[in-house]
Amino acid sequence: MYGYRKVRCAIWRGGTSKGVMLRKEDLPPEGPARDQALLTILGSPDVRQINGIGGATPTTSKVAILSRSERADADVDYTFAQVAIDKAEVDYGPNCGNVSAAVGPYAVDTGLVPVAANGRATVRIFNTNTGRFIHSEFAVKDGAFVPDGDTVIPGVPGTGSEVVLNFLRPDGGATGQLFPTGNLVDEVRLADGRVFRVSVVDAGNLSVLVDGRDLENAWDSPWFDDGASFSLGNVLEEIRQAIGRQLNLYQPSETVTAATHALPKITVLNAPHPYQTRTGQPVDPQQVTIVARAVTMGKPHPAYPITGGTALAAAVRIPGTVGYALANPNHRHHAAVIIGHPGGMSPVEVAVSNPNGVWQVDAVKSIRTARALIEGMVFLPE
Image 1 (tube, one colour):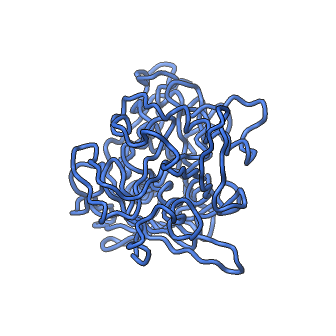
Image 2 (image 1 turned 90 degrees about the vertical axis):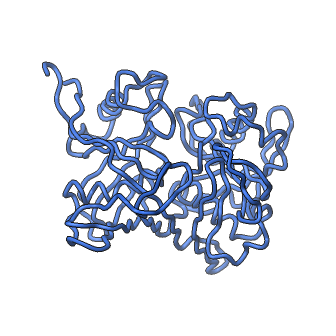
Image 3 (image 1 turned 30 degrees about the horizontal axis):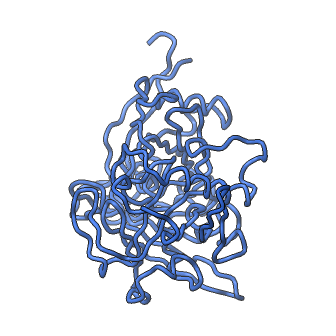
């Protein structure tokens, strides 16, 4: 096609997200030119992303940039990009745990990482966003990823083969500390005088965990409606930005919005209670450790982000946090933290320790599924 060049491309579902998979060597170097390439490929800025291949929602406007790693302790380097939909912005601050589930299988299927012909494969992933490692384990046959299986994850119809993600020392990826404010609980005072209790946890992704008891109408139906302009949006964004500025994540004069700055993430927590999922299924409060509602790019997440689950699961295990205070006490010694969310229930196994009086997250394990959707070439203007 005249005036365009072809770029290798694939779209994969990883967990409850869809990501555009690209190779680092096919893109311009890091900087404005690469950002513009990603915006063009996905079709931003435009609320429908009609001129690109983006999915026009926060969970489907995502990119994974991959390359063979030169590190001795990793097989593949992976950079996650959250592409804004209605703004010309690309955010490399966070990682996406769901898209991470597609990285290992994609790397195997495209020959980036050779594996044994049959059995279980382990791909060692270095995530450049957080500077942390993820070990991805999954079934292979004839040297390729096996997508079919009987594993069910909330928010995804049908079944698939399990992709086991082991996040190694995921704490401190954004700030260098598990509790970057120095406190297990902080109070955030808004412009109107209201005060909210939060725990700020940097594990997986830097997250602000809000005590839902301080919020009114936190569990109304808009949390389950992807298209709703839910009433808590402005309040949560003010809390999120207050913590971001406290941690010097933004320049003092910088204009910050939910669509342009993904960190910190924000989640509302509450104690287990009866509710229905987005598909109308009842959730037994005795089966969950904690109930959570995450917000991504200013909109309620339809399920729960994996990297956000890392921070939440860690907080539930550490006395003194908002998560610990609201968690089901009968689940204190369970192997996994069961997060109740709009999509259902998600287990997250977490190991924390307190060497020398400083809490740290040693490892987190989560089970996802993944599937290749399309592979080919995307046209990029010269």
